[in-house]
Structures are given as C-alpha cells and as structure tokens.
Amino acid sequence: MFVTASAQPEVLDRWRSALGDGQPIVEIRRFDSLPECLLRLQPQMVLLDLSLTRASVLRDVEQMLQVSGGSRIVTFTDQIDEEHELALFKAGVRGVCTLDMSGDALSRVVSAVLQGELWIRRGLVPKLLDSVSASRAQAATGVTGRFAILTPREVEITRLVGEGVSNKRIARHLAIAERTVKGHLTAIFRKTGIMDRVKLALLVARRR
Image (cartoon, rainbow, N blue to C red; front, side, top):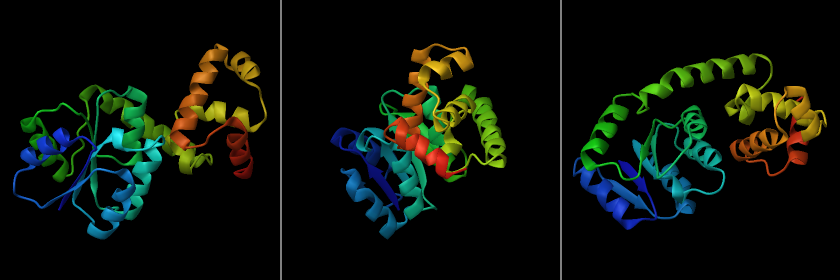
C-alpha cells in the first residue's frame, strides 16, 4: 500500500503513472486527512509534497511517524536549503526529491527506499553523519527531544536564550553579527515549532 499526498493533481497523476499497478495507491489532497489515513492503513511508503504540510514541517513528519512508524516517507519540494534537508533526514524521512522528478527517476527512488536505502545527495552524506554524531553527543549532555535536530551553534544559542541573554549579548559572546543570531533563532523556531524566544526560554528552563 502506497499513500501519495499532494494538493497538485498533476503531481499525483505523475506519481500514479510512475508507481504503476503493482501496489494499491491512496491519494490524499489535504494534510489534515493524512495522519488518520496513515493510522488506519499503515502504508509501506508515503510520497509527500512538502507544500501540503503546515508551517512546522518537521513536526508534521514527526506526527506521521508516530502514527505509522513503519512507513517510509519520501518528501518532494521545489526548493529546500541544505540545513532543512539534513533536518528532514534526522526527523526520519527516507528521501528528499524535487517535485519535477521524472517518472523513471521516481521509480529508482521507490525501489531504493523499499530496499532500506536513503535517497540522499552524495555530498550531503558526510554532513548527515557528522550531524547524527553531534546529536548523540548532545543527547549525552541532555540536549534531547525536539532540540536534538538543532545544529551545535543553534543549541548554543538556545542555551543562551534560556539564560535570558539578549541577541546583542549573544552576538558579542559568539563573535557573530546580531542579524546572524536572528537568523539562527528563526531556524530554531522553525525546527522546534516554538513561536517566540519567551516560550523557548521557558522550555529550556524546564529541562534543567
């Protein structure tokens, strides 16, 4: 059983054609319907158009894996930055692909992922390994849960926010520009699903 999720009919049509008749396919066009569908069907694979998800993509992926832990999730997007791509793999997806991927290429992705492989750009593999190693080190020092997907610099900034340090002082302490601190905070909020620095500081304080 495959589940394909996209609001774009042409994308669903292309995926259906590439997958062929070997597996039953259930098509989903609204993210709100997806978790219940996964819980009920426990599909072998999910093809997910990231534009269907909400603001916190990583939390959406986490929710999907909570209700259907055996499903292999392959995500598709028009554009994604390297940092977010790494975060998706760390969240549990098995592949990150472009929405305009050809049918033949998609068939290769599906075959590889069903055999237990990751569909990942070759140049990203060392960075993913380094990131996983860093996450294990963070777990050993208490940086777990939703913070485990943060980069070492983001963890450092998160801890300083938890201590009540201002952006200006964080920038001075880390010898970076204040706008860089703000950029890191935006990434932290996106990855953790936390909406502002006050809630972030409260969460850090509760973990001590």
